Amino acid sequence: MNALTATNRNFRYAARILGLDSKLERSLLIPFREIKVECSIPKDDGSLATFVGFRIQHDNARGPMKGGIRYHPEVDPDEVNALAQLMTWKTAVAAIPYGGAKGGIGCNPRELSMSELERLTRVFTQKIHDLIGIHRDVPAPDMGTNSQTMAWILDEYSKFHGHSPAVVTGKPIDLGGSLGREAATGLGVFFATEALLAEHGKSISNMKFAIQGFGNVGSWAAKFFHEHGGKVVAVSDITGGNAMDLNDLLVHECDVLVPCALGGVLNKENAADVKAKFIIEAANHPTDPEADEILSKKGVVILPDIYANSGGVTVSYFEWVQNIQGFMWEEEKVNHELKRYMMSAFKDIKTMCQTHNCNLRMGAFTLGVNRVAQATLLRGWE
Image (cartoon, rainbow, N blue to C red; front, side):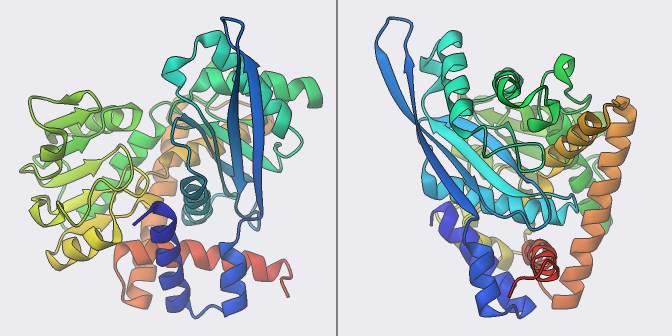
């Protein structure tokens, strides 16, 4: 099942639980705007290369749209659409004043030189600069992009609109990036795990963790688990695991499984073999709906992505706030506020679970969808 079908299915299920009007439900599902642009650049060897850039702006009822820009050979419009929609619900669950967006360029960043990447980023920015903005749509890094990419977008955007540090987040510190942003998603995963385990009368210490995907999120999460007495028993990334097959990690003997890489890694083929009692979705959409059902029947508790990995967008929000105020925070304040937001969102999700007698995924979806629906109605929808 692809990401868009799965996300739509979760949304529709949440809408049914909430008893949403069918016209409103349809309106919430359709993206506000879909942008597709051609980006042609001269390569270093003098030849011309053409790439396709996308930006899907899903919803802005609760504030400016927010979401990453990925550079990946398989930037599939359906997947970008699903991820934009997930950002709408994710920002609502986190109670930060944004809607969802997502974008990307279909390219392999590993095959492009630094100067080619810079040219590509600037051309993309020139094509979309009047459709993004501090109070319109605020991009951030994603797969295949980083703080340098954001620096180029900021610079190119500022040529048209004047100095605008708040137009992107995930920037280098020297250009108005926030302290604590680098570790934010991983730290958020740690706080979310802590909240979930506490709910089950357990703590991080002495629990065994298996981490699939050892990039930014996985490596920081592993560090925080380890520092708090957790035993990280297995890690893997795209180059392989510590002497084990990538898929073996998902069914490794552990208490807590943390998928931090791509979507759809837990599916009907391997779900029955998962040994973990808790799954923390640090990646976007790592569990297929079929796997969801198998795991639920086994009594595995799944902490859904739209909550578990929202630490990154929450600290992106703090960065945006700091840029607008022109006043930067200490790292300690950033981390303290992040913990406050993560704990508060967990409480809100649990309340929804109790109200609607549903699992954590539906608790999070109903919370997010309900907040966006309320904002839409208050703004005068009919």
